[in-house]
Structures are given as structure tokens and as C-alpha cells.
Image 1: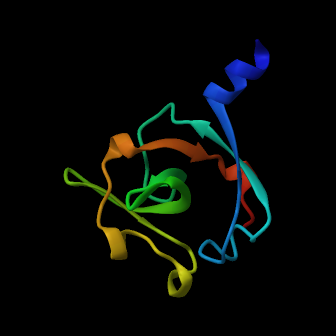
Image 2 (image 1 turned 45 degrees about the vertical axis):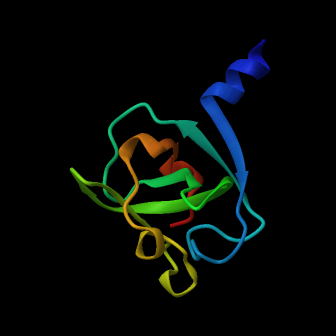
Length: 104
């Protein structure tokens, strides 16, 4: 029973690729929690890739507007993000990686 609750409230994700360097390193695992508060610029979030729903992305919230959320990788040279697929809806972002899980 606890395991089922944990999967609804938290999700472990493995970082693949360099798009979030130096904050997140390829091969590292992070825990994302179900979003419990409004998004803020600077939040690191997990979302389904709008172009391939089977793929997860970990990105930083770069801008918020009525039109949606702009997400970007910290290593922009190697990141596929809102510059490639546009803004995403706030509803599309349901997972947040807490600052305590990030390198600073």
C-alpha cells in the first residue's frame, strides 16, 4: 500500500544526456514530487516530451505567462526545450524536483 502511494506522490527519474549540466549529471537519479504549489521561474520540473509522450524531460522553468510555461535546459547548447517545441501548458507540468535534490 505504501509503495502505491509513493508512486502517485513521487517519481524517480534517471538523468540522460547533458541538457541540465552542471545542475544534473547524466546517470544521476532524482526524485520528482507531484506538484503541490504554483510553478515559479527557476523551478526544475519533469514533464512528458510534447513530441514523444513516452519520453520524460527534466528542465528549468524559464518563464511563465498566460500562454504557458517556457522550459529550458541549464546547458542550452545541448538542450531540446521550448526553443524547439514551444511553450507547454501549466497542466503538462505535474512533477517538481525539489532544490534539495539539485547541485548548486
